[in-house]
Amino acid sequence: MKGQSPFRKKIILGLTGSFGSGKTTVARIFKSLGAKIIDADRIAHQIIKPKSKIYKKIINIFGKKILKKDKTINRRKLGELVFNSSVALKKLNRLMHPEIIGQIKKRLNKIKKGIVVLDAPLLIEAGIKNLVDKLIVVKIDKDKQILRLKQRYLLDENQILKRIKMQIPQAKKIKIADFVIDNTGTIKNTYRQVKKIMKIISA
Image (cartoon, rainbow, N blue to C red; front, side, top):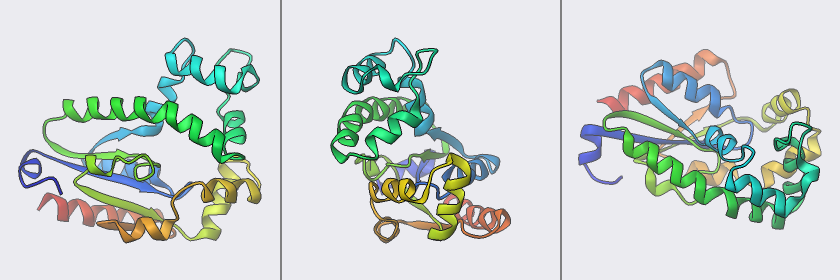
């Protein structure tokens, strides 16, 4: 907690969880209940657009083989490269994280009041937990997590497990969370949990 004053004007909730836990769904529920959302993944998409400085640096490191015909970065190909090499992943994170964090800070500073949800998959890994007042971790049963990822990204189980292992384990994230949302069940159940958190935070 940063102190009492931010809670009177602005409350920043960090939303994170393992790959495929359903953070986007949870963020949408928070938004439907009146929270403002800052989406770190959306920022990441924006900063790698053609002609940006990050785009050029990524091409210099990983080569033009990661480009689509329209010269945009093929995130799937880039993902295959970095999730097969911890060294490559660290190189990409060193490029991306400072720019993403800078954009997050700018957006947070523009919001003066209300509940703000920072939806960031690597919130803990990127070392930005200090930016939030409360940490929310979305958890999910591993079997359901793997099934969702197979359906959404068309990845095989080995590829999925590699990506999950690159992140801080779900259990460790839960230990430092202020709130935990279990997203294994129905959307209605998830909605109830989000609504309860909003009620506690708003009190």
